[in-house]
Each structure stands twice: as C-alpha cells, then as structure tokens.
Image (tube, rainbow, N blue to C red; front, side, top):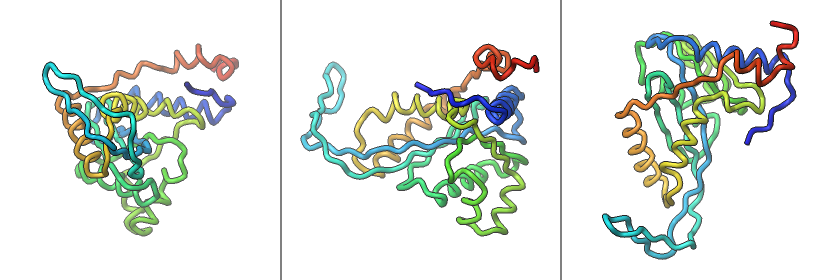
Length: 220
C-alpha cells in the first residue's frame, strides 16, 4: 500500500528518531502520543434498514444519501493501551490545536509530550499560535516535542495502525450525522480502553537496515 520515497539523510534521521522513541520504556511523566486524523463521509439511509438481532440478519439497502463530511482525530498511547478520539467538523489548524490542548489537559502532571505526527501543514506550533495566541502556545510548547515521520512514510506513526482498526471495527457502518458518529466512535474508544489494548511495535533499526540497505551502505 505504501510507496517508498527517495531515501535521504532526512528519511533516515527521522525514522531512527521515531524508532528510538518507540523503544523507550513507558514513562507516565514523559508520554509518547501518536496522533493522526482521517476524513469520514456521513451517509444516511434512503430506506429503513433492519437492525441486527440474535438469529436475524441485518439488512441495509445499497442506496444512501450524503450528509456531508467530518474529520476523526485519533491519539494513542501505544504502551499504555489508551486512545482518544475527537470527531470534528473540519481539519483546520484550530481543530488540530484544540485536540492537542485536550490531550494535554488529560495529563496535567505529565512533564513532556512527544507527539508523533506526519507532515500535514497543520501539525506544528503555528496551529497552536493561531488558536491560542503566542503566549499560551509558548507555554504549551514547553511540554511538547513534535516527531515528524519521514515524507511518504506515515506508516511509522502508530496512530495509523489504530485508525485501521477503527475503520474495520466501527467506520464500516453508515453514520448519518456528526452526533451519531461521536456516539459510536466514543463507544468504540471506551471498549478498547477498558480492554487496555496495546500496540506491540516490532519494527526496529535492525529491521530498517534490512529493508533499506542503501541507507546503511556506509556501515553506520
């Protein structure tokens, strides 16, 4: 599914920084938060569907009506088995900043947040400044470090893995409104958190040397 970009020193340095981060033991005072978002189309039924019941097959007509779109933000603490979902109308700088602020508020005693994000132009300090002003953004950045995945390598962000699970387990069903999407996605989130489902990341620097030998032909 992924198109490997041109391998550069930047690709190597960013990849290794993230792999090193993932290798660190869990520390409640220095959190690793993987954050990403996914657009979602709100679809309504044109005919009444049959809800699933024991011994009965759920039925849904193939026709639907479009009710607009929304954006699903997902943040996960991979080693703690805790994730947060935010269903917002859009994917602007303000939306990203509000999500980051909410996450910081969930952990008032944490000293440092290491956010793993991709290269979308909203994933940076400028969004915090636009939303909250320079003074508050500066205070927030004292607790924040952004780790950017290499370009065209967002698979290094574990939020992508969790979004894939969300898509299979929850987003395959039609949701006709922002309210309904928030209810169902929140229910999915609570169940996953109750089970404390973690992500066991296994891709290491050793694996990287095998997958990308051209990056390591100097013997480093």
